[in-house]
Length: 354
Image 1 (cartoon, rainbow, N blue to C red):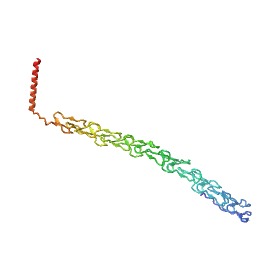
Image 2 (image 1 turned 45 degrees about the vertical axis):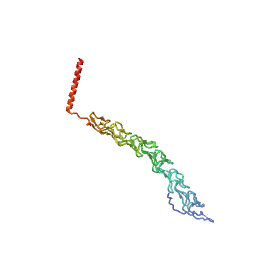
Image 3 (image 1 turned 90 degrees about the vertical axis):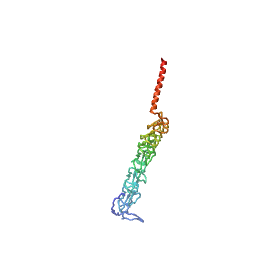
Image 4 (image 1 turned 60 degrees about the vertical axis):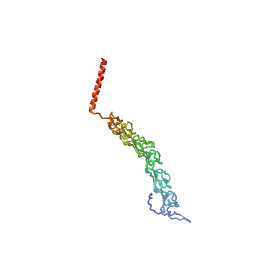
């Protein structure tokens, strides 16, 4: 409250001055508080509005100090300006409401205070400064606060600006108090995204299981993914992927196989088996009458003459025991007979030629 000046009353008697009392005027009496007589030769006059007089027998009234007012005559004191108002002049008959962007929470004040940053007041009425709510900001010097624009947000009250949505997020609405995460399977590196279109699908060969991310993760070996994947898929049996971050798997080459899913390589067909197709899940046993002694083969070989193989999936053939074996003597005799037969054929042809 504005402190009124300290007053020491000194009573002055006037020989011809009186006060209004029932039945007339009593001469030689001092003017009562709230009134005065300028010369002492006239009747006492009530103090006008905007002035006061706390003492008796005075020649003048006092003006109300700044921060106070008096709207009635004959006052012995002034009134403090109430909350929301001020008065910076002397002798006021009323107080004024604070202007816009100002406030006065106390009584008896000669001025108003500006609203702090992030606060506003309409002024011209019983208003105090109010903070901007979350999602809204107040620019100093402007009465109306504004909602945060799309792509920005403000989680706190009493702020003078909004914040850009960080990478991996966006907001499409005004007045946002928080940003929305990009959905799983997408990412964003931009600041201030205004819609979900600011989020990009993860490229093939990558994935992102969590929302609000700034990058995607390469698929590990043995897996693959398409565009916008939230997770990677295992390579199917009969295929493999030996590199990370790939959009597809590679079928096993002929001579190789893979019975399991999610693998980074294929296996060579073991000896006694083969496969001539791409993407084999298993190898095929060599059929009876054939063999394969090498691994990773695309075909089997037939048994040579005099050799047999009655079983499947074998690595070699063995002699046919059903054909009698020739002794060394028999072989020599057969050779001599063949030589004689050849000589006879030769002798028969020679005379004919002569």
